[in-house]
Length: 113
Image (cartoon, rainbow, N blue to C red; front, top):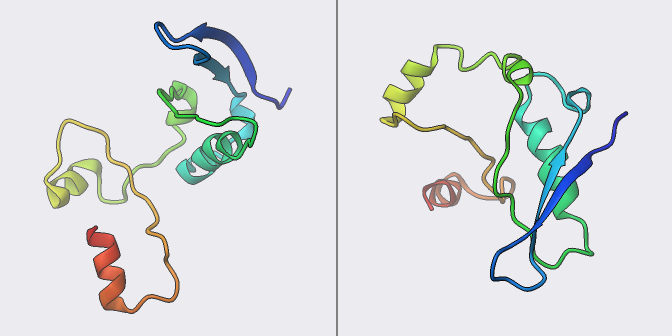
């Protein structure tokens, strides 16, 4: 009940030993409203599999039921878009690494980069 399922594998046209795998996970595996949990569960586990020499995530589809568990920004998406001056595309945040041991000035440089 709680494991991912590979439901299709296609060879990549014109590439030897390269494939596209389609994997589905049950929604019960993921904490509601947590993008961190979602990405850690999918990317962290799969990309840590040492038997794979090269791997990339091409597409991620989230069910409507799961996407409705996200509350969104506390002031509304329009306020966030106005602050960032970014419109017509998805917004994604991330944790800057290293996040410990840097001075404020060096942390600012890491964020800027």
